[in-house]
Length: 147
Image (cartoon, rainbow, N blue to C red; front, top):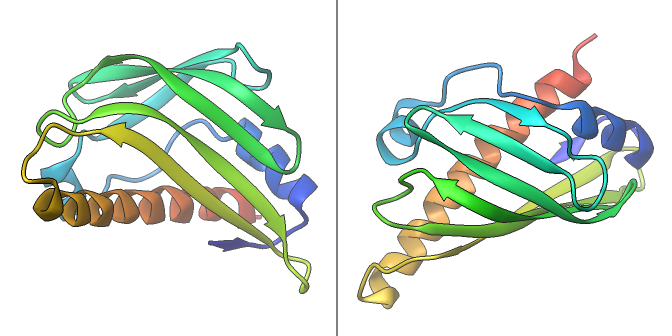
């Protein structure tokens, strides 16, 4: 998703971003836990942030941070039911400067699933992850671009 501002401006806003400001749409509430807020530090490798959801939490540990470019984490603890048994492993945010002065932010989630057969479940899981990423990025963009 594209954001107004340079990678440095978007990075600063993402680093301060703590919680999603609106409830997820119904289809996501039916499929995924609802996020509440984040507690803890997340500005340096080794920092840990506890992401609270209705029904549990995740503990994210920052593993690689390249200011203005990359924010990567692993899930150190999962006390949360996701998608009927998915185990979240980690993820990343990647920022890329666009020619028009905007910044593209890409999100990646790594997970393991026990659902079988994989050829059937993998595309459905990818679709739900994509929906969640778009919801998350839209919320971030509203926060970053609001006056």
